[in-house]
Image: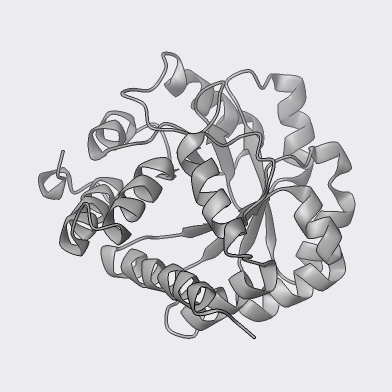
Length: 252
């Protein structure tokens, strides 16, 4: 028996994916809830707690993704922690994810040196394994990442957890240029991208931007009635406009 509460929760997940498509998202990252997230700030942690309380599973997430991909040709990346995928069985997870239309997987706590089994399962099923770089990643580490990375590099802009910030740290441009020189892949910036103004300031540095906490917070505000759906969509469209270089259409 599936509770009505769980059905509502999954319908809301499907709803926000549709909203992202409507707002012009180029890639959508779907988080897999985990009880002990080490890279996520308060907003994402609370979202994970709500999902776990509703007993959300990987299978249910993949079902939502599959329904979404039946309607839209927008890449979807799953973000999660290794234990979740390992417990599912890496081969089975990769096969099921491929059937659902998942394009990439970002495993937050998987070191490149220990990624062979996961990468093999994903690559065999046509799924890209995404890897991270940080402000303290050095040239030696870049060489390790270069051997395994594909798709793009997710650059963690700050030494800390996810969350909204007023600005980005100094030296960002130089670090991103270094990553591109060493790894030769597109670089997207995540952690701290909270509003269109942040994207405008960093637009010429990166190939893309990941917005997490700022969206999750407003999404929760929308479903609790604190802001309207139009307000939420307005914010997303402002982010999308900036990401596509349309600063006139940005709502700063």
